[in-house]
Each structure stands twice: as structure tokens, then as C-alpha cells.
Image (cartoon, rainbow, N blue to C red; front, side, top):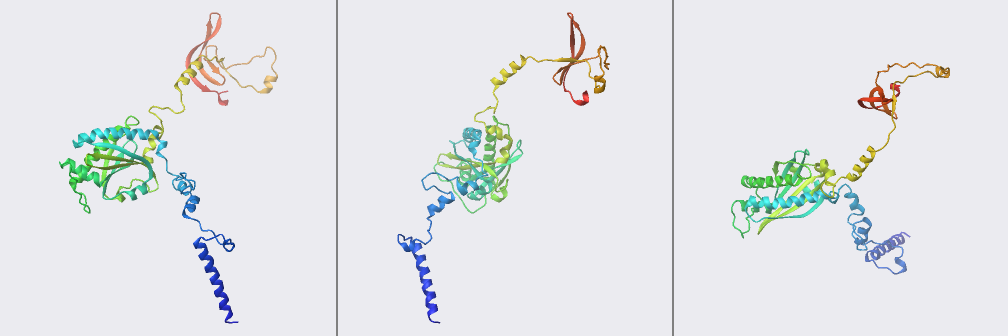
Length: 359
């Protein structure tokens, strides 16, 4: 019996191994495979998690990805922002031509919503990062100039010949001359950005500092959402990219303006209807009553009133009279007569809601 027990255990192990092998091979159809667990393919797993659609549809923002990116605000919800960047492209095309004395073409590649931490980790180095301040909005933004744009602008401003590739020396820090030339470029772009936002809301973008390490250019928390605009600058056979990142916290003071579909749009207001309503209100009839004085009398005294009883008022005939509409006092004036009618001459305009203390 001692020799038979190991043989039984061995047979159980062989059965388990056979079942696992059948499951891995994906073989089926037999009755012995009906109890084996089904192995999901990668497409089925992605479909369950929301990363894809088995029917071929686009579900990039569904499932887990929708939860991860739920805090991001799509820039398409700020229609006026795209208008501002289109205006910036036109202004930069002119200003950079004057700055470089060369034929410069500026194009807007895309505008996306990103998380600040993800963007810092995706910046290809070496690059220069400019931190700028929005004076009127009391917040900051970030501008990234890639290495191709840095060497191109240095080559152009220092008189490099056309048709020759700019010399790149990687693995060394940028020189003082290169930093100064890039700073001049940044100041030109910031001036154009101020002009692009000016029709929407006057703002001054001020150069703060220039960094080469992304960790030193942190202006927001890693999870904060931001708008990223990627600009492509071509100078014939040279060029590069400039990326402008503005956190949503920076744009918060003008968020309502950026929500407009067109310049000057007013939400929920109709000037024609407002004018018509105002004119009709001026023609509305309103009943008013002239009150000389009011007194408080106990109910037992009122029950004893008889014809001929007198009620003493604490005013004189020449004291001012209140003109009221409901419980609101609109005017005060003196009582008199005009054309055999009792009249009140308005001496004071007031708006005062009557309360129990006034009675």
C-alpha cells in the first residue's frame, strides 16, 4: 500500500498537467474540454477594459481611460481659444520674419488637453523651457523650444548660410550666446501672445526665466490639467517646434470669455427682448396710495368704535405724505390741491420696503 499511494498522486498530477496543456493550446470541441477555463485573447481583454471595440468602433475615451482622463477638460469646450491661437500664428509669421530677416512659415499642428506631469515627462531633451507670467491673471505658463529650433534660430541670427544643415553638438550645456538669442525669440513670441489675447481680454505675458531641466520649470501640480498648443516653425530648410502650455488655472479668469462661440457673444441675453420688455414696463399701470400716517390700535379699542369716534394721528396737515405701491414706499411729498382735486407734490424719491418696525 505504501508503494501504491505515490502512484495515485502521480496520476493526479498527470491529469492536471494534461488539462493545463489542453487549455493553453486552446483546443476544444471534445467533451473532456468542457470543464476547462476559457483563456481570453488580448482583444477581448481590451474590449472588457474599454481600451478598444470588438466591433471596430472608437472607444478610446471609454472604460478605464474615461476614468483616468475624467479630470481633463477638452479644449473644444473653449471655442474661443482656437481663435486666439490662430491669431497668434498669423502674428508670429509677421514678427518672426522681421526678427530673422528670413522667410518664416508658422503653422499650428494641434491643440490638446494634457496633464502637466505627463507633459514634463514627455519633453524630448535637450530643450529650453521658458516660464512666463500672465500679469493680469496672476499665474504662469510654460513655453518649450526644442533643440532643432534652438540651433536653427542661432544659425539664422548669426548669419549661417542657407542650404547647410545646422551643426548640433549634443551632450553639452547651452552657451550664454545661445541662451540670449533664444530669450530674444521668446520675448517676441510672448509679445505676440499678448496681442493675440488682447481682443478677448488684455493681458501681459512677461518673461520670467529660462530653464533646461524640466524639474526646475514646474509651475503646477503634476495632476493639473493644461492646454498644449504645438507650433511648427519653418525657415526654408531649417526650423523646429515651439510648444506653449497654459494651465487651466491660468485661464480661469477668462473662462467665460473662452466659452463664447464668437467674439462678443452674450450668454442667456437677448438685447431685442430686453428693450421690448423695458418699453412695456414703462407703459404698465400701477396703483399707488397716499399714506399720511399709520398708528397701531389695540383690538379692544377698535371694538368700541362708534359713528363719530375719532382717531388721533401724530402728524400735521403740512407733514410729508408717503406714496406707496403695495408695501414699497416709492416717493414722499406734500399734500395740496390742484384743480379742485387733492394732490401730492413729489419732493423725494425713495425705495423702502415697509416692515413691522415701521408700523
